[in-house]
Image (cartoon, rainbow, N blue to C red):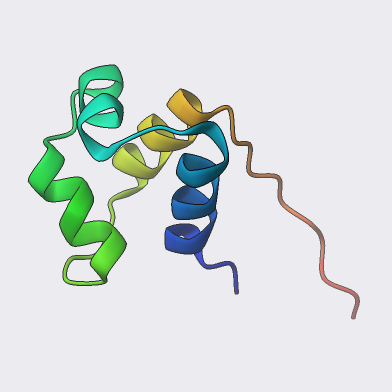
Length: 66
């Protein structure tokens, strides 16, 4: 299973993007981003998409081998 929190956090660090800047880019409140990254709140699919788009991240589905 993919850890979206780690992907977002790592991308923010690599790109030098703060939570405030990410909030401004996405419309997701900064305190909500903080809660997501700390694992205090589950992310919705919509907000994952917003955060990924803003950070230039992409999710692709890989078919499992049977």
